[in-house]
Image (tube, rainbow, N blue to C red; front, side):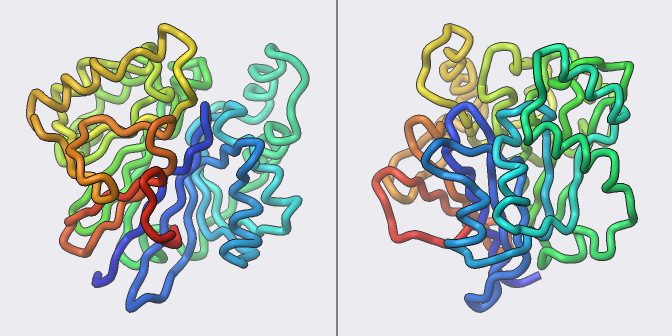
Length: 295
């Protein structure tokens, strides 16, 4: 379909939040969001309500049932943002997930909201994502419980595609979870046309799975994470080498006019992909700013 996809990965430190919309002749369509992480200074709920002046979020994907992927989930309700469609891994049942989360202490309001949604958002969707986003499509995968029994390996994995451009949001998958999905032929096939990989578990060492790169040749990696304070965050060079194996020059960032193989929110701020209906994409970053573009 004609038009453009605007996809922005926000800088929410050690968290995750991305927004995407379809634009046609300057008119923005429905709003979708992948994860609802926030910082002390920025929240997706207030951005949607006051900057975009919307009271409706058409599609919300939560890739991981941990706080850093939903730290502003309850804030959406508090700001009066109506969530129409909620997509997550349906496993495990809410009661089992509650027990898993309570091991780490009292539940936050966001986790409690997630459990409520997980239990109650089970009705058929009136307008599926693939019919309502102007030609942007989503395909999801997940592992089942008890085959996988950690929230990381039960992450919802989301492929977003527009015009042949494809980006993957794998949540916080660790090696065991990756290998379980790689056993699925359809998943391996979808990896084959991947352009951009968002590094699992914020680029941490335990989110890396070398076998993934036997089935894909992404042109760049995106990491959503805070400043490096742990040795487990030191994976940039490893990912950079995986890109260099097939794309020595990586991708061009329009704001800086530099070729990059790994982009990080800790260095670049928000990272935005403008994708036309032929799958050609332009990358903008917050630092070395260009004029603001509505996500």
